[in-house]
Length: 71
Image 1: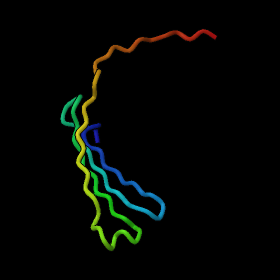
Image 2 (image 1 turned 180 degrees about the horizontal axis):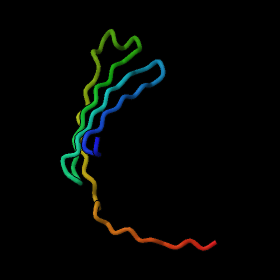
Image 3 (image 1 turned 45 degrees about the horizontal axis):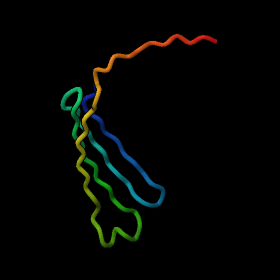
Image 4 (image 1 turned 90 degrees about the vertical axis):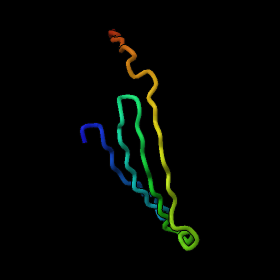
């Protein structure tokens, strides 16, 4: 969604299902959340796990150098 909001899911075969969301606060800073639900016998002892993420992009404004290719 305009590279501001990211939503997704993840599935590990016969192991777990995850729901993931991320929000871009600025060009360099983003936060996110993930909920992981087990599909194995472990779910009898765990209601799932929560993960909070904080991301920072270093070198966002690094100039790109075009290099010609000679074949």
